[in-house]
Image (cartoon, rainbow over all chains, first blue to last red; front, side, top):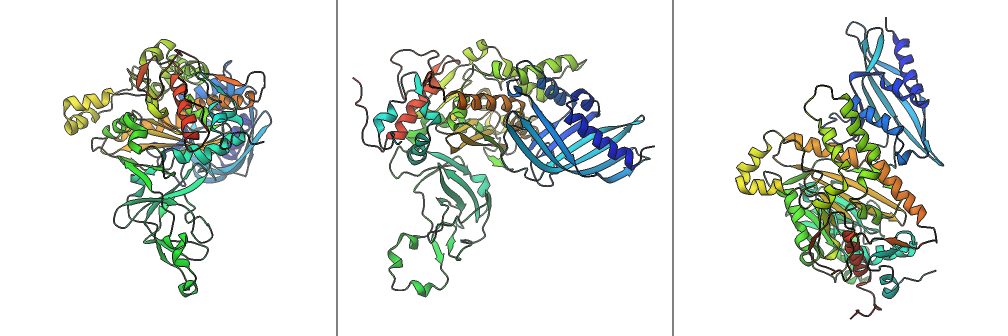
Length: 158
Length: 446
């Protein structure tokens, strides 16, 4: 049975995997058809015919993760690290019968590399589906509060 | 210590035949002079007419440091003026775009202006009676930029009253904009969304040079494009169709020979493009229904001519790049000597299938976004150069690849695609437009 605590624990666990750079374990949280989406508009509806910062399937996420470890990934010398500070996830939908769960989590995200440190704020919206006894990410949507500002390199995952 | 101000000789001395002095990238005084001379003397992209669809629509921009705005007047005409109230200098518009209604109104003292910039009204007007106000520049309203040309909906302005005409400045280079517009079955482009914005801590010219640098993709982008190809090969299983994403990344790994034969074309005044014979954009999958639309609109022969011209990157000197085959314009906006804002715009081909717009948007976020794994390594190179150039060990940047002695300047030519001649071409133009309104020049060589 998947209850609200199970869902919240899943969200915390995801952030922990990112913060500890367990990239493969993080990828394993995604459903085969899962997507990671960073919109570029306020309350954006369409990830494909409106511009986004990222809209990536598992193949593209694997490319990113594999690149991070590459010998010739020059922008990762030195490597980046990240830190997620999450507010308690709000359960938006919890449909045990359909195996569909939605959350919204306010966050502050820090990405650092060398002497640089950048801080971002926003909301992560998760659409999760049941897969056996586990949950999988169908969609992780990351809305930055200042999506319209110009950023430098954002190399890891919010 | 000022050493370059109004000293054309010193500025021209920074550009040798096939080398440039590092001061062009790192010296704050040179940057100030670029703002004061180079940008006002050049034709600068301000915006696109599709952003000004209705009367009262406006966009704001900067030319060098100077804030300007373009607006659609009630009679349908487009006007470009300085974005500052003639009263106390307050910027009239603070947003990137919007609709002002029938008039602009300064938020400070409510001076108002028609959408062609002329003064409409001032509160308590009688306070200006018998003050000589009628003879001041303020009475004319928002200061207008006289030299404005709208070429196939692309709005360009030159701030200097004197200089090279639009036609002479761009010449045949406009063929890339033509090709991009012609790729719409209706001959029309539309901006539908805000650009992707990406802040770079480097000099703006590094970005411009990189647009025609064909010897870096297979090196700097091995980690992104190379990995994309590798992961796809491993994961593709039985799929016969290469996903759009892999089609976009893959060609970045093309070998030197590919770029050598694809060629570079240079034009006078610092413009030029990569991808003459073909380009990294040549082998994308056909999009269902598009060719039929193009043939219906232009006829068989012309449609194939338009779609057969698949240029890579076209640099419009000084600071934009147009990618006609993918409908992208990148604007390299100088902020400081070591800070550049890059705004990458996508145009929709009006009347063409959605899939083309989808592909252009995908390309833009793959390559031009702060979250782009291609962009990450480019920016890393620029930042390292911005740091490395502070070294006194060698004060010159080497642009000698495929240099031939007595290379002609301000000519049209097609050359080997790995040449650094377009970068030399840009720096020749740079010295010209930096100094054209200064006094002391180097004597022309015999």
